[in-house]
Image 1 (cartoon, rainbow, N blue to C red):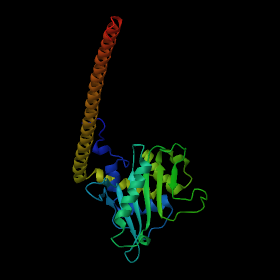
Image 2 (cartoon, rainbow, N blue to C red):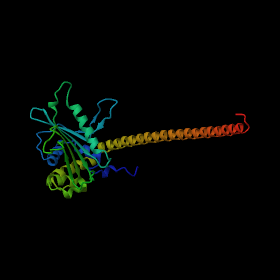
Image 3 (tube, rainbow, N blue to C red):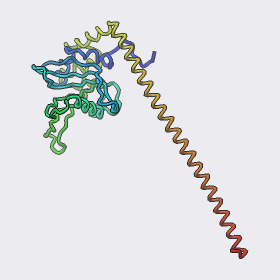
Image 4 (tube, helix red, strand yellow):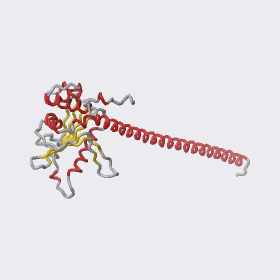
Length: 278
């Protein structure tokens, strides 16, 4: 077994596979979103774990950890939420959030619909470490006018980052209890205890175990393919560099021959002049 693989029996809630399964339940996702965002949600459609989206075969698609929509009393969509558990700092999360927003919006409107129909959208990243290096546990972003930050753009898109290893720095108890659970695996509140019960249920389920093995194999295949592409690219770059070096060597040799020929011509010309033949 790969030493980086986590045995199924030890999967924490911060594992993407387990996180997506557990938060695909409304009774888990709804109180969590209400707590960390400080909002009231009327109702949720069934969350979609590992939802994939692709605008065309030529553009990069994404796979959301958990994608969920809030619906109103008449079934209308009111808000959308993308919840991502991101353990590794890949140094491009802000730009990934931007791309996720764009793809969410591309699916939100049918052809001919007005932009006025775009709803509130939340992109949520849950991370262990402070990717912004500002010493805070919660970062909430929205678009503001640079010269007058009291003026909002009003595009209804929000990008929030929660740093669970800094849970001790959180003043809001409703947020702190979830971040503490992610950091310590200790459930101390009703909301986190419900999450832990759901996690334990999945750990006891043989079908989930099989799904995890398949998921892990698919992940390994993706990693292998990416490594092969990287090696192929490095090989092409090395071969191109070798060809360039060879071409430079040939150019140096040609220059040396040309310089030698010029020196011989100058010596011959000098001899001819000395004998009055030129």
